[in-house]
Length: 377
Image 1 (cartoon, helix red, strand yellow):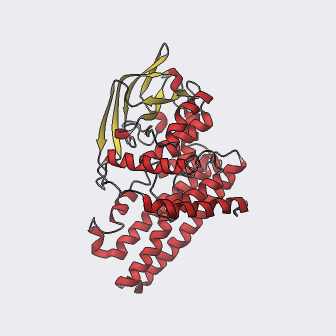
Image 2 (tube, helix red, strand yellow):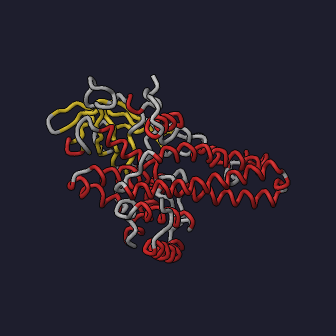
Image 3 (cartoon, one colour):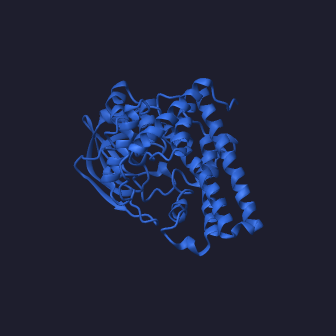
């Protein structure tokens, strides 16, 4: 597997660095974390700048290696995260690009790329737990519409979203993986109630969404009816494949900062701490190489990440938690101060072994689809 970059890819990197150096100083101040309308405007404004500079469609039209370079360089430069555009740019958008019709791509992709519309993810449900295929939200066909009733939880950015990538059950009598359909639901449709949820860190980027006889046009279905589980696997392959690339770069930066902090506050003299930092350094270097391998594999098979993303997601989730546990050791009592660096990151890291597929689910995927082990009973 070739993990090196071509001259053309390195030229793309150099031009991107030059543009970032000019563009970032022109950004307005960041809004308060609790100001979601302000954050939406800020995040979409950044996406519009990328679009105008020719980088708006890099997540879809660029090769996996170019996407990797883009995510690496923007994180290194301290550019804004995709924020409210996360689901549209990294989940729903790539899925529609891969599975949608020409008309669907023409309708939904340009507004995402231009920073005009926000998407949220309506996958998880209160009674399904980690078993996504156990979802109960029903959609019955009524002429040219589906009529949807049910509820979703942990719906990312629902309070500021224009659209929702929604999983519904269209055939309650089919085996649970075969009766699911992937819909694009307009968030201003009658019958939708959104209730924001606060996380342990105090943020509210998730919400409960209640659906009461919501009408969604059949034309908004991506893929065939009852083929939604296969389409969902495409979505999740992007979620677990390249969506965390910027975070790996950020964790490597945090690791260097932790070492500097430990040298400054006297904790560097602890050999056990130095061993932990050294092991984490090796861990994140390996994760970066695994990311490159996954990207190279994706290029070889047409651009969609494979099940290797589950290997990455499994190990990265635990490595991130270990990183911020180590940060708490470096900070000592100061790790309880919410205004100190890394404290809120430590709280958010607790969710990583649950979000985007629990570690238990990732182990099952690795066991069954990579190692070929039999399914559990």
